[in-house]
Amino acid sequence: MTTPDQPGGAPEGVRLQKALAAAGVASRRVAEQLIVEGRVEVNGRVVTELGSRIDPVADKVAVDGTAVQLDQEKRYFMLNKPRGVVSSMRDEQGRPDLRTFTDALDVRVFNVGRLDGDTSGLLLLTNDGELAHVLAHPSFGVEKTYIAKVKGRMTPQTLQQLKRGIDLEDGPIRADRAKILQTQAGAGHTMVEVTLHSGRNRIVRRMLDAVGHPVVELVRRQFGPLHLGTLKSGALRELTRVELGALLTIARAADEQRKGNG
Image (tube, rainbow, N blue to C red; front, side, top):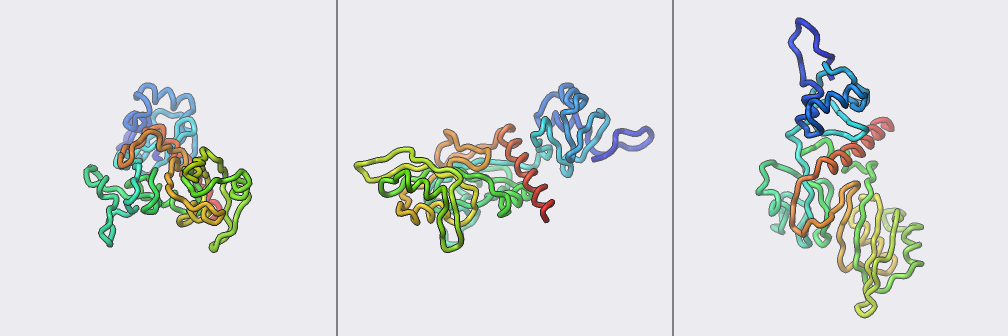
């Protein structure tokens, strides 16, 4: 962040209120009011001077505690990945990959994390390498919610087992939350919702298989503050400003915590 305008020198950076207006937070006049009221932070410090200038690329700005992305070059998309598509921008085996959905975009993006080929649902795509690095870090631990169709009739006792924790070959794991949504008695299937923050490979499938209920179908419905909602399979859309603010806020907090622990 640069200092307020000084007479006699060439100003550097962009006026804070102009940057907020360009990011779609508010009109420039309303942005000025937000600054004066002490509701705007730059790099964790409250800024109340209207002459303040910032670097939209380097400085981190928040309004009312919610992060704002000022770099207009950064783009963020939500994809409802269908089954049969691998989470790769170029699959060496020639299988359907994410280019099916990204080739028409006017920016080059990449996926944050992965969903295996047989799992559908919410996948985040972006060109923001810094955010992707934070989200992919093992310490981030964002909650993910899945809907699973499993074989057999699951009992409340099995749910408790998932929440208490089970031992897998790569270590213990437990669900943060789990509940039965529907039992299909005739078909011998159960619909289950499982929420956990682990990023281990195929972890939901392995957990459910370990308690005797192999997965038939699996969909990721939620990734942190992002919800799949009514987005159709194979559809792609940009995140809303509210969604992006929520995602950036928790990612920045996690990054600060990680740096503090490091």
